[in-house]
Image (cartoon, rainbow, N blue to C red; front, top):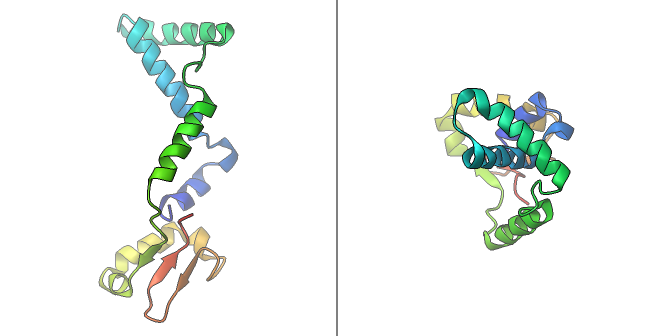
Length: 134
């Protein structure tokens, strides 16, 4: 979380980041291609567009796997996974791998600039804790 969120924040507007919906569409395209394609490159794209438009008009688009069903399944899985807690980087790792540590800090600089105790903190031993868990 602490490594990739800063990069994504710089590259992609948060409002346009709809990974789940893009994955749903990709899965629909994959299923349509597997079920109805002749596997000839010239026919795949036209077939996919035609089938998706037809499914939308017929109301069958994502009907067996609706967004609320997927969200309920994700919530159920989330509750079954133990909480991992915040990421803690020991001071020994920071000193032994200083160039990697600096590269990491440069990647997440957006989260560091607001200051200590917002997205991260440190303790007396010099360990750094990122507030990246729930």
